[in-house]
Image (cartoon, rainbow, N blue to C red; front, top):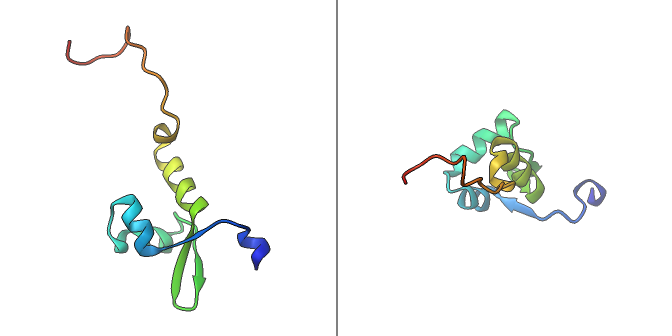
Length: 78
């Protein structure tokens, strides 16, 4: 089993919900829908930190790759 998880820290549903600033029910929905990887231990779910990072990067790629903004082409208030 250690080979499967490696050294990736496991987070509780509550910890993931707090990190994402959503409810625990939202995290459970993501897990049950297969959108976020998880490990079931007894009756509890644990989410590997890498699964959280993968979910965030797959739904919001611009968050992790903040590209510099070209001031000449950027629009907004002058």
